[in-house]
Length: 371
Image (cartoon, rainbow, N blue to C red):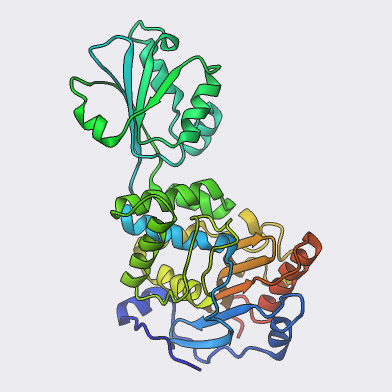
């Protein structure tokens, strides 16, 4: 088996897990399922993070449509760009003109107009900013609000909330710099980035993942489009010494059928996620087989012996069914990535692929204390 290029320090190894007494032996049943027509020649890689060896590999270097496991790269890039404790602020400011206000933001990816959602998830409530205008004695429906640093959809949500009776005007960063005599009226703040990422991964939120990727690209000095995201992802993976040959993305969510990444890239990244403390929120946010998030209803019938023993990011689009994360084998934990991107484009075929992956992992998963 080929040895992974990147080397772990002894401290990092100690943080991961105790050295296994014996290496994982992949049973024939695992290999048979990996070769099943249901998965149509998938990319698969299982890594032993302690011995730095590949336990099982099947076309792991072929770039494929990753679906939502791309969110792992977006999450890592966001943390590298901002730090896990970053909060995104949005403010409303008055000007000497009583009918002109300025809303300035940091592209909070999780703004909401829903009070219940704000209370439940600690999201920033954007309507508070409009209420602050009213508290000055001015009717918000008679003013113009110039804004920068907010997503178009969030402005549309505010318009809808107020019956489209408030006038908004986008201004550029250059125009913002020319503004003077701004008086802050109110400021709202997002939860820490770690909480946003946790929700994003647990429920596979496409909007959040894409926004985080674009924000990170901007913060790293690149454009907010796909070109910028590609450069940001490459820089991040280079800094972590993760192989990214063939990586090409159109978004940060994995929804695009033109996104490409290899099972090797994802598996090596998962290895880094597990050993680097700054990425703990990513590990913690992953769904658990048969118990939480997008894995709550999986491993309950097919592969049920692995229930609670797999912690992973799910993914699917059209012809792709993917799963990538960690599988417990006795007292040890192994990294895996599966990208089946030639599945027939219908739900029965995708469901069969999911069940096949679940059964495959169940052939190696074992509770603590069992070898």
